[in-house]
Image 1 (cartoon, rainbow, N blue to C red):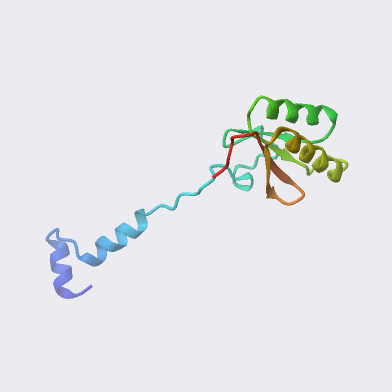
Image 2: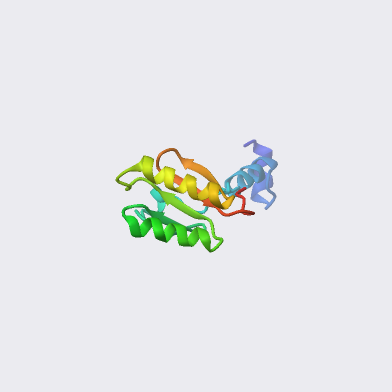
Length: 122
């Protein structure tokens, strides 16, 4: 800061440089997803951004995911705990073909989202 800038600052005038530094400090960056597993430290959430999550561990979980999907809601399928991942993936790919829905990969061999007909993700 120059001598003249110091006098202006003492009199209550701010320099352009200090205004720019204040603007930079107040700027926030928004994320697209509101959920972060690492940040929130939740191992198995029931919902992520309003979409229900099903962890495929047994036959009951397959039926639960299927009933959510049949009701017209999207569902996140977590294959991480499935005993036979290829069977699980094939099962839901068959369901998608029969219902004209779609499946999107979130994380390969781990997390997929089933979308009923007419539902899209942005």
